Image (tube, rainbow, N blue to C red; front, side, top):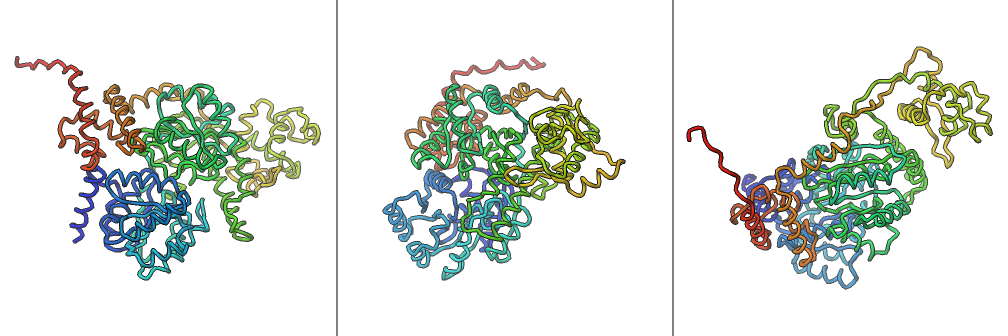
Length: 629
């Protein structure tokens, strides 16, 4: 019986989705659901989580409810399902009252196999009335980390899911999915949702196609322009931490001639939707956004994600960076860091307003965890070890400390003894009785006669001018290293001051202790321009670039006519595969990655016609003369 189910699932995968085989973990999760078991999948962004609940939904007798907080995901996935000839609907706040009740009426008549619903809608009388009477085979919870206070994005509205399940006359199968979950979050989700002996599959968090880099920048906009110049005609996301930064960066990009748009919570619903559509439809392939953008966006041809500011935790960063390269092709994730990013994030944490339902001890507990996550995120920006390995270890996955595809692995480092300046900085904090901020302390140790140094009489301190030959930038790096390795720390006040941990006090008392740091050598193994050229070559590979562009133009014209995003017609990966295979028949076209029966019927002939014309216009290579002739 199990093999029969697997064969049916593979047939749906090929016919509807156009894929020849499942990715890692997908078949195990699908089989578990089809056996009637509660199932929990932890898979990185772009690993194909939606297939894990959509295919069982098409095979189960009743309706599948997909609970998601993401309006954009609902709209995107319902469009994609409709393109495959599958009836689906979404119920959320973007619908008018009449649209909502009309969709609910169709649902009662059994028109939809899959219904996406926001958690806030679950316990409304109208939806409860429908759900109690309907044949609900499965409830699938997306972004399930939101149910846990250990998670980076806890949402009290997700607790309503538990109450909703209890209202069901017959308990359906419960499946849950997330891209980021630490051990604590995983255990919390299973306990809160009451998953019964669940199948838990963690496929691993590694996205080998993504290149990671951190750059400490004093001229972030210049760095963005430099990157865009080296990567023309590509689509990407530039994340900023405030609306003001979004507006500023977007305006400057437009003035400089780049096809950019913007997205943040301060825009009207209409403008947000229009800007998002412009990005998805490649009308404006660059979007500058706050983290309010991107959740549930399945745009497959995002070739870069640049973080203009550091996010406040690793979970958010990995999720946002993971929106690049969803098609499996090469993509780049660049984080531009400055010290102000830490201060801004500290302010956000202390003044958090995301969850107004949290008060007292619960609110303070969330803040405490957020502070620790910010520390881990900051450490990522300063580590000289493999960036990929740092993130994987954070999620409990241990691999080699060298990936060969991050800025640290492509940089040569040297070990440097920093004991003398470190002792000066720690000593200055101690002798000042932990009263001042890091900037003025660095100035004092460097020997500055700045206004603040003189005002606080730090020029009379024993450690004044203790490191005059070390640059302010290097002293700042050493100070950050001391904070991140628990010698000292900054308070979370509006005007933070530096204090010492016990480790710092012990260091002052023991003159034998040594502190060393790794610093990049002046010459890199690979210049950024060489790397950009290499990336472009890898992206193009052995593909006829002109043919690829012709197929993109055809895809765009069809998408415009159908009023759907281009990648829902075919992904870049599918177009690349067409260029390599040059299919001339239906059978050959169905071998292309992402081309199933339904999509072939709608679009196959049009794309094959372009390919045939290209084959006629391309001369055959001269035949090689064999040695026997």
